Image 1 (cartoon, rainbow, N blue to C red):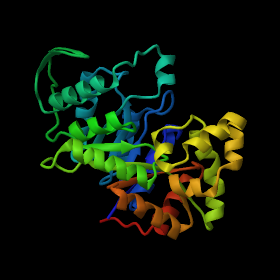
Image 2: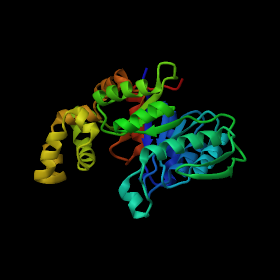
Image 3: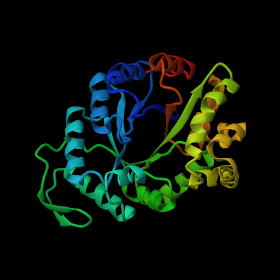
Length: 323
């Protein structure tokens, strides 16, 4: 059965994190993913707050940009969290949003080798090893004073085929961006499994999904439409390619931009690349991603107002229960 998680975006004010994360756990969600979007609520500190406010729910950071912190510092932070909350923490790495990195003057070259070196070194440090290496990063007799008793699973955020294959090779799990269709998950599942090899443990796929639940599917689509348009306004990519809508997205953006895209976007697109509808429709959409190969679907709500009430309603409507 596909696990159902919840995404807490960095736009949520820090003061609300304890109450909201407690509601997520009480509603029966499997996990909480805390994003790190610059320059909003921090992912590391936010995940720590969520863990402190809950007792059993899994909590992940999705994702830490690999260029901003030296891997030794990422390992130190992850080791501290995993040591304080054993078996509950998941660590995610990504390449980050280039515009934000550029704002800070942070270079972001060689994503594949940088990701490989980050994951390998962080995993070694969390296992208690001493590192004396110089690859994309320098380690001169670096060792954690407090490595965790259990190394937390490491996820990689991947969209393109090369990063997806690398994730299958070296990561414990893969995080997929919002807007992924069942076809995209299916393609990625095949790539990940082939890269991992027949004898490797299954790599977990956690697919983020824009989530809009309403009394009717039409009302849910209306609420999701501007959020989806905002993401699609960034342009066509592998996600839209697999959904079969890249040419149309590009044409509409070229002629009328984001506003026209929001107005003219077919309902079929919303149904395909989000979890939007009444409760039965949302359940079927989650199941479709699971059938395609996702082990977990993490829901990102389109509206953060009255979030506790939304969470309680969603947990009941989707039939979640703590096990």
